[in-house]
Structure formats: C-alpha cells, structure tokens
Length: 142
Image 1 (cartoon, rainbow, N blue to C red):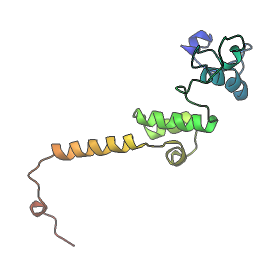
Image 2: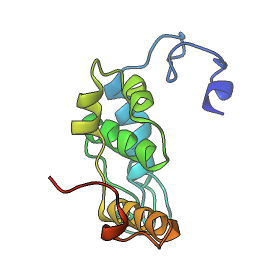
Image 3: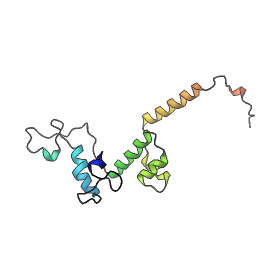
C-alpha cells in the first residue's frame, strides 16, 4: 500500500523524497517513525503537534519505544523467523553475506518460541508408534 501511495509500485527505494531519491535514514526516523511512536495518551497527537492542547503531554506507553536501527533490524529478523520465514530468506532481506550472522545476531527467540517448539516435538513424539521400547530396537549397544 505504501508503494502505491508513493507512486512507486514495483521497484526502487521504499521510502523516497519528493524528487524520487532514497530518503535519509535520519530524516525517516525524525519525520515518520518518532512522531508515530511518540503520541499523547489522551489525544493521540504527536508530541510536536501537542503545543495547543488543553492538557499536559504524556507519552502513550502502549506504543513501543524507538531503540535505533539495529534494534529495528533485529526485530524484523526475529519477527520474520516467528512467522516461519526460512533463515536464508531472512539473510537476503537483511542483506547479510553469511547466514550465520543472521541466525547468530539478528534472530532472537523468546520463551514462547521455545515452549511452542517443545510442544510441537511432544505432539510428534506422542503421535508416533507408542509400541516402541528400548528393547525392541535392532541396534546393538557399543
């Protein structure tokens, strides 16, 4: 939707200036990201637009805080991973030369991910043939 509104539906930079060139990351942060995240909890106006309000500005704590571009990229990698996107695809999106950089530094799992993975493993084991016992294997001990 953003590309269509920007009249740039197919290729090129996602965030462009009025001249069609790539927007500065600092300008993007200052003009778009921070105003969207720093809103008044009462009237939802951006902090800069709050000067004429009849109440004191208090930031809406339900909105996330900005922690920088590295955190943004790490959050993107982690969220794509939670959505089931393969590591190699995340590597390409983040434009890393090595997938080990992506998996080691940009994909962070949380406790819910670990619990979910263990739940999947448990359901697979439960669904397997329950007649197997250690004595029924044909493998000989070493």
